[in-house]
Each structure stands twice: as structure tokens, then as C-alpha cells.
Amino acid sequence: MRSSETTRQRSTPSSGRKTESNGHTFDAIHTYTVEDAIEAIGFGWFQLKIFFVGKLISAADSMEMMMLSVLSPLVRCEWQLEDYKVAFITTAVFIGMGISAPLFGIVGDNYGRKPTLIMVTVWIGFFGFLATFSPTYSWIVLLRGLVGVGMGGSPQGFSLTAEYVPSKYRAKLLVFGTIFWTIGGIFEILLAMIVVPALGWRWLLVFSAIPVLLASFGLLFIPESARFLAGAGYIDDAEKILEKAAKINKAKLPDGKLTQSQNVPLGRLKDVFSREYLRSTLQLWFLWFGVAFTYYGMVLANAEVLRIRNEECLPINFLLFDKIGRRFTGALCYFGAGLFFVLLQLQVELGVLTVFMFFVRGFATACFNFVYIYSSELYPTSIRTLSIGMASAMARVGAMLTPFISQVLISQSVASATWVYGSICLLCCICCLLLPIETKGRALPQSLTLEYNEIELSQSSNALESDEGLVKNISTIEMERKKIKNSKQNEHDSES
Image (cartoon, rainbow, N blue to C red; front, top):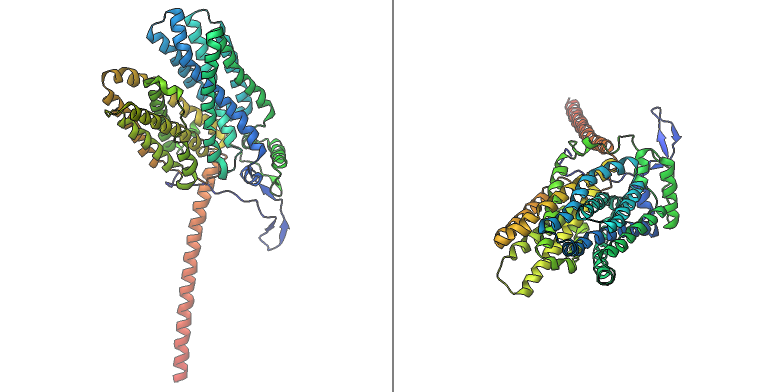
């Protein structure tokens, strides 16, 4: 943005009467925006239904990721694999996610969140199930990589949920949703303990594919994003969804008709790098890279961390997002992760070291929560899923590079490895503080062009008000001068 901190204020429904230049008045049609409607509808069962389906996808993704920690040692024994081949099974998943995340983002911004999510969940379930029949190592790598391709589109569910939640509740609800990721991981571990000893790892893949297929079925019962529909020109469809949402929540829409959003290109790559968003985009890429680099570094450095809870620091986000803002909360989380990473090199008892690891994982999870929420609030609807997809691809780069630190460098020098992670976190902390836009209390932008026009209009209005104020001041001075002149003339006449 042109200013360091520019926030869009919520629009208010237009007035019912307008004045012509000749002074006569006429009746005008009341209009309201999608933002007005979402705020008027409030939070209720309508949002909870979308939230539950979206978080079922998140839990299913967590199961697929957690399964890698179970699958790798099992196929190592069965096929007598070397270490680098075992590691590449996980790397193949991240490669698939990194390639597909921007592509699914383009699809989501052009064709809608819901159809993209249906395609993504069916894709994950299909290739996850197909991996059951892998005859060789090459097939398991290929099919797990294709599962990763599908997982690259999962952030669409986060965007869909965020686009229906009023700003007052958005941060708290999305922070709470992180618990479903943990639930999915715990469920996968329990499932493996039951299935693998009795039936083997192939049946584990079968049962692990079921939740994501259930999620694809659940998507049939939730609506498309009204923000996307309005941006794409489907005003009648968007209005019908909003009317149904108001009925479910026992609320009332603003008077009038839903206004037509400005006709702008959807999912256009160059908009992500426009002058309004270029700085924010580059900084967010570094933040996404940093959080994945540190989070998965902690996981790989100590496999037991996979089996412990990771919500310890989420209350920080839950309590502070709406108190001190997104940027300062994100900076606090990155600082906490960096601090405890550096403390890991101290010679302390095992119990204290475990506490340090708890907080590293907890703060890193809170950082992940921050980048998802901030990214979804920063970008306009026209490029929201594309922007998040591209940022997510940078996170996969961090996840692919971190083994060189957490498994190679750490074996030579623990201090060097922890200082690398600590330094990255502290740099991310500074990056958070320097983000140009605070999204706390900010209406979700609908399009880049519209937001830019509103900024220009606001600046023009301020300039006009300044000019009008200057004219008024000049007029006042002239009137005072005339009064003084008349007073002196009257005094002169009375003396005469």
C-alpha cells in the first residue's frame, strides 16, 4: 500500500435517498456488500457447519502426514531400503505439495473454493487408497507424491471458512481449528497401533484414506463462498446463499439488494506482485519458509515430538490476536520459538530439555496459525487462494531444506544447528514487526482494484477536505478583515 498502514473500513449500506444537483430528492435502491451481509448475519450454525467440514479436511491431512512417520520404518524393513530412500518418501510428498499449491490456488480463484476442494479431497483419497497396492518402492514414492499434489490444495478449506466468519470471531475460530490437526495426528497413531500389528501397513493406508473421502461427501452440503460468487459476478447466487445463512443464524440481512462487485480479473498472478502487495508478499514468503523450516526441523530432530501435544502456545494467539494485533502476536510467537531453540543447546536435565522442545513445537505451531490467518485476511478475494498457495509452496521449500540442518548439521554440532534455527526465527520476528499492513479489525478485501480505488478515494477526500478547510480559513480571515475595516470606518464617522 502507499501508506505503511492502510486498512479498509467496512462499507455501510447506501442511503435510501439521494439529492440531484437541482436540489430535488429521489428514492434510491438500498444496497449492501458481502462484507455488510457477513457482519449482519453474525456467527452461528451456518459458520459452524462450514468450519466442521473444513477442519475434517485438516484432520485428514494431518493423518496423511503422520502416517509417513509410521510408514517409513515399515517399508524400510520390508524392502530393505537405505536411509536416503526412506527419507525421499516424505520429500516426494512435499515436492507434490510445493508444485500443486499455486496451481490449485489459481483454480480456486477462478472456478471457486468448493469445486476445488471436492477435486482435492477425492484426489487425496483416491491416490492414498491406490498406494495400498504399491508393488515396489518406486510406486510408493510416486503415489505418495501424488497424494502430496492433492494436499497442496487443502488451504482452500481455510480460505472458505475465513470468508464466512465475521471479523469479530475470525481469529479466535481459526486459532481453535488448529486443534483438529492435532486430533488427526493422534487418531492416526492410535489407528496404526490397532491396524498394523493385525493387518499390516497396507490396510493402514486403506483406513487412512476414509476420512478425507468422508470430507469430500460433506462438501456437498456446504455452500460456495459468497465472496467468490460476488467477485465472479454471480450476484443472485451469492444473495440466495446469504439469505439462507441469515435464516439459519436467525438473523436479518441489511435492507436492499446485494451490490455488484467490481468486475476484475480473478486469480491473476501479476496481482500478487502488484505495488500494493509486493512488499507484503515477499515478507510473507519468508515467514512461511521460516515456520516450515523450524517446525519440521524440530520434528525431524526428535521423532518423539511427533507424539506429544502441540497446542501449548495457541492460547497466546487466541488471547492476543484481537488485543495487540496480528503482527505483534506473530512476532511474539517467532521470538518464543527462536528463544527456546537457542536454549536447546544448554547442558540441562532431560526433563528441562523436554520442556524446551514442548515450547519450540508449541510456538512453531502458533506461528503456522499466524501465517494462515494473516495471509487469508491480507489478500483480496480475487487472489486469496492463489496468494496462500504460493506462500504455501515456499513453506514446502523450507520443509525440504530443513533435513540438512536437523539431521546432518546437528549430528556434527548441536549448537550450530540450534543457532541456525534460532536465527531464522528471530529474523522472522523482525519481519513480522515490519509488515506494512495490520489486518486486525480489517474487512476482507474483495478485489485489488477496488481496494486501490478506495485508498485513492480516501486520499482524494482527505485532500479535498484539506482544501475546503483552507478555503474556509481564508474566507474567515477576509470576513474578519472586513469587520475591522467597517469598525474603523464607524469610529472615524462618529469622531467627525
